[in-house]
Every structure is written in structure tokens, then in C-alpha cells.
Length: 248
Image (cartoon, rainbow, N blue to C red; front, side, top):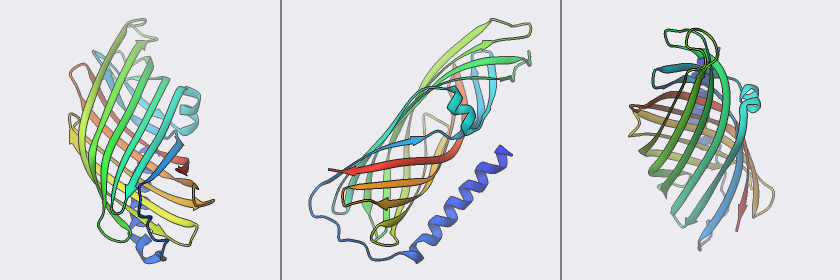
């Protein structure tokens, strides 16, 4: 069910992005000076994938509630700076998780996983059309994991590994005002470099409480396939997010 859920969600996101421009209403004129927006957000998605550190490996499959129970610490936020057609975006995410799963190695037993995932993106955006921004940048993705066999012939054996991947990416963002207060936001990108492939999609609905404060709720999917010598990971994460934007 999880494997079918993520592609369906991605198709729904893309469909919303394609339909959004037809719903567009005139928005407020863009301010002339520099505009800074700070956006703390919360995103803890369901996750499916595989991880291998040394000779130990495990399959990870967890729902939102599973990860909420497994989360030791998390911190997420975004900063957007714009002037006219040009903008700069920084997005950072840190999460430390502990999870028990099934080993995919010869032992075929349970394994205890401790995983630290980080993602830091920096991008430049350019407003090519009224509601369309072209985006390009780079993201750094440090990952570390420690695996401990908890049953079977290899019980108590441990393995660990870490890797930092640097990818370039290109993408696009749609910001479609529906009314003075409501806006649809859609985003997608694809990248590669140190990792074999990385991509993400996002669709959200933003509501302006005032000229300086806005709330946003949406769905985000992130996929990373990385094959480093001491740590191999292949994850697809998808789930709802909630954020609040504060314009300075």
C-alpha cells in the first residue's frame, strides 16, 4: 500500500500544479525593495526504502505515526529573499530517528537502526512569467546510520557509516493567487551529482493572516538514491507539512 501511495500522491501534486494557473486571480503588486520571509515548518512523512552500512542492511517502512514515535530530534525551516524578479532560497532540515526493521542480508533477522538525515538547499529563483519561477541550485545531504543486529546468528554485531552528497538541481515553482488571502503553491525539482538521483515535489495552500504572516498546509515528497562505498541509501519520503511564514 505504501509503494502505491507515493506515486499516486506525486501524480495528484502534478495535476494540481497543471490546473492551478487556470484558477489564478490578480495578486498584489510585488514590492520594490528586498523582501525577507522566514518560514519554520513541520514535516514528518511516511518513509520507505533500504539502507546498507558495511555488510549490514535493512528495509525501512514507516508511517507518519511510526516516525513520530521514532523521532528523537528534528528541526526544519526555510528563508526566502526576493527583490523584483530575482530571489534566493535556503531550506534546511535535520532529523534523528531510531527504528527497528527487518534485515535484508543473509541473516534475515531484525535490526535496530539509528539514522541521522540532513538536507540543506540553496537556490536562486527567477520569475519568468506572472506565476512561474524557474529555480536552480545545490543541496547538501549528509546521512549517517548505525545498525545493530538484534536477533539471529549475527546478534549484537554492529555496523555504521556516513556520507555527504552534493547535488545540483533544477526546478520550477508556481505561485497562483486565488484571492487576496488564498494562494496555491506548487514546486518540483530533480537533481544529481554525488547521489545517483534526487527529486522532490510539493503542493500547498497558503492563507495570509496579514501582510506579514501567512499559514501554509500541503503535501511534500522527497526521494534520494545514494550509493557511497560505506553507506548506501534509497529513500522515498512523502507526507503532509504545516508551516508559518513571517515577512520582515
